[in-house]
Image (cartoon, rainbow, N blue to C red; front, side):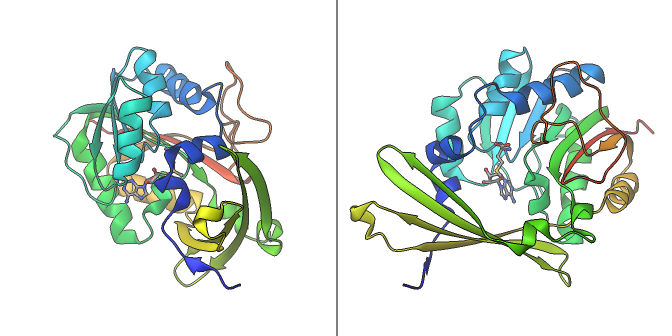
Length: 268
Ligand SMILES: C[S@@+](CC[C@H](N)C(=O)[O-])C[C@H]1O[C@@H](n2cnc3c(N)ncnc32)[C@H](O)[C@@H]1O
């Protein structure tokens, strides 16, 4: 049976997203709070591409004044109900205006930044961050590392199959990653099947892509938009193996499959 093409099953179903990518110890939120604390960031934080809101809510619990922003109204509705505390607003990270100097930090977790596919979108994102941040404000992002794919094909060769049960329904996803060298994108096709008879059990194919951003390219974009890079490294972080533990300091290499950046908006 050839798959039908659907919307994003995970971002359309935030509870399923949290079930598929559990973070019971709020590692991503704790790692972010640790970065903010180490660099003495002020209290006002914008979590851009906030998804289900669990990281935004963790930062709120840590005493920060948090705004979570996302393109998905479904995610925002879920965040307001399940992770209250922050205020949640609609915004497109390609270009947004949530007030001049309204934040002391912008955070962008789990590759949200890589939804900037083109250079224009990256420029739009960074100019919007520059307007949103107070002088000396921080940009913290955690994402896939484009450099990992230089000379390595291990993530490309074999489709990854994941099976899990949520609310009595068995889900199975087969994910294939391909490199689009012309667009400099990592393209993902994920085909879902379920045993849900209401759904007709038809396979659903979903397509998305991330920018393959290289560390030195990221440095260049940041410098061009007035940011000084304070940290740029492949771990430890919330999605590295082994994962970051409280108290661990960042490394200096940028070779593995995750990239973490902390940059400060220059004051002049
Ligand atoms: C992989 S999820 C990460 C969610 C959250 N940051 C986390 O770490 O759990 C990516 C999120 O980015 C959002 N997103 C995708 N494109 C976006 C855009 N152009 N502007 C704002 N949010 C976007 C999606 O709706 C989704 O919630």
